[in-house]
Amino acid sequence: MPSSKKKKETVPVMSMAGLIRYYEEENEKVKISPKIVIGASLALTIIVIVITKLF
Image (cartoon, rainbow, N blue to C red):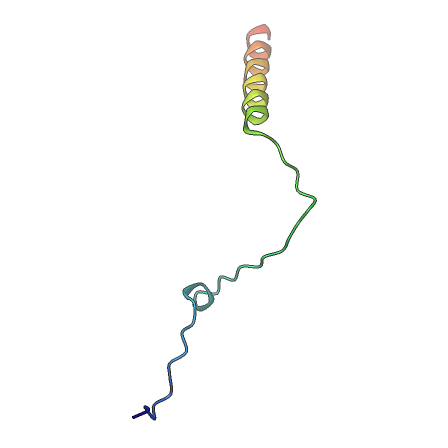
């Protein structure tokens, strides 16, 4: 026998908490490899240390 009760609608937890994800395809992202980020941060650290020692 089919149930006469309405099926409960399941609402995703994120929607209930007010958090909504918007998936947009962006082709203009800046892509930087992890090696460049680590190298730049090490270079900046060395520059700051050298400048502090000189002055």
